[in-house]
Image 1 (cartoon, helix red, strand yellow):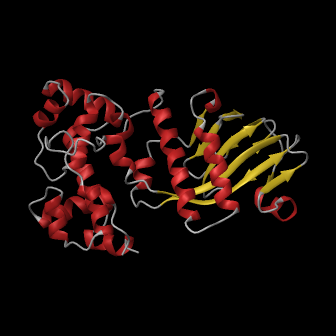
Image 2 (cartoon, helix red, strand yellow):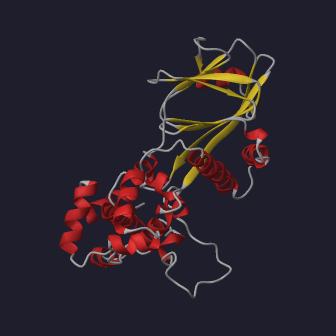
Image 3 (tube, helix red, strand yellow):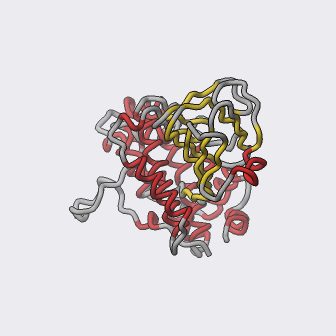
Length: 327
């Protein structure tokens, strides 16, 4: 049985006046990220001199951090070309195949075909290596990751991180490479934690720059919607009403409902139902609790009603989901 995540013991945000004064305040953004557990796989450095073109195959989430020089990134199935230079961070969130080259239209060789000749366990070097970048691939352990990450574009590019107070990015690269090249006990966990920090910062920066559309990410960073979302996340079993949630957001019922629909893309109670079923899915995977107990915990007084709702969202019964997603 997979390890049970810590977030199942949360206290409803803003509802407990006796909370530990030293504890960090929970927020909707953190709540959802608890369901997206990143796992680092391989990490290496690329170094190339023009002309060069490296093709990365489809099927993996990839991260590129440009450490010197500049590159063009062409993504399979997308018309847009992306430019990245020293200090830029690029994440391919949908597993697209792509080419990294010194200029657009450059012919490219598959990176795995180049490895036997040019890879020395630390660096893939082609030519003098004027352009360098950290390359890694990663995955997500949370069974709900794909659903939650669907609000993101296929390519995320953050420009000029060296020009911001993000010195930690270069340090993160250093520590990731150190762990990958000199593996010690806990190296895989360390790489995953460092990638997690980079991923969270990328999401946070991208979201606050106003690039988000509808979805949980927009609501999680909205100052008025966040308190209501946090309360839903912390106590999905409560019989929330729109009036209750509007009060937490200091808005009238109509103003809250309109803003929630516009920002999140769902009505408040529709989002509540979605979160209840997503939390139930995690409980089915990470706990041994009976289906009836899980149903009650997420706000269903009838196991039959819960099973109908769950099947409507996941196209299988709760027990089928548990069997299909339990390690």
